[in-house]
Length: 125
Image (cartoon, rainbow, N blue to C red; front, side):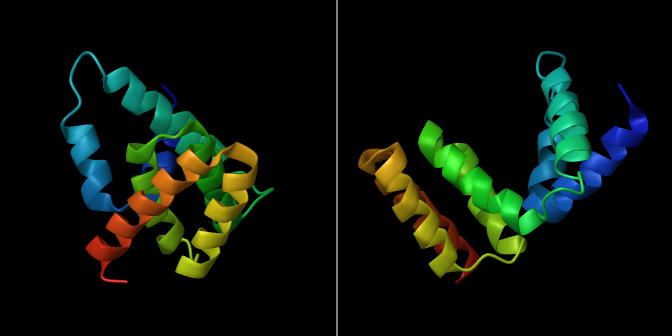
């Protein structure tokens, strides 16, 4: 493991998803899934999320669309929160889901709308 890249990824991951969630994920990891936590933190958050080619807002737009396409509500919930933290508005998130409905399927987008509403309620927005 590249410790410097992991630490940079941990910082970014906390800033986007929230320290409470990220710290709990690391703290609750065991021998079985710690390797996955390290992989995600180092490569996803340390390397890709910190590349200069796209800003965090743009990366959040992309993630919301791709996670909608994959119909992964647990990950979507995290990334809706992250998108808000990265400056996206509810209106922009709605537009991502409407666009995804056309290209990825209405059922996936409906689930994304439902999941996002839960996050908005939890965040008081």
